[in-house]
Amino acid sequence: MQLKDSTVRLFSFISHLCVFTNPPPSAYSFLDPQKEHAFLAVYILGILVAACIIFVLVRLCCVLRERLLAPRVAHISSPPEAIDDWQALERPSSASAA
Image (tube, rainbow, N blue to C red; front, side):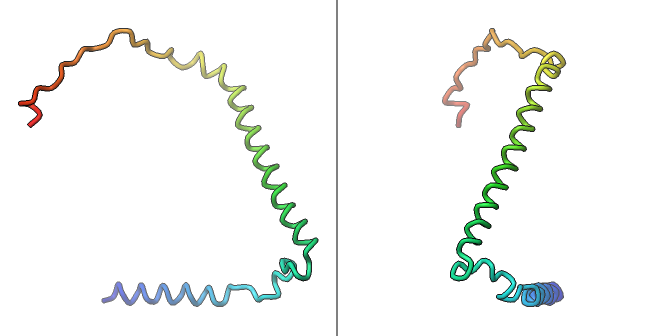
């Protein structure tokens, strides 16, 4: 019973926070396409360009890291194991499968 009460209190507290943390409708008035359609388009394109630039920078860092560290790591790690001999296994009999 106490767990149920604490859960109800927690949800009540969270919903109370959500009611008081929601911004008023005028806080994002610049996102109204009826009033500021050109500014809204520039805002959306700016976010798109920023995301693309961040992606390219992170990708460039990954490629450079791979190119710079690959020669150093290649001689440190052991060579791949050559598997030339295969072990022959018998097929299980029908008596052992049951």
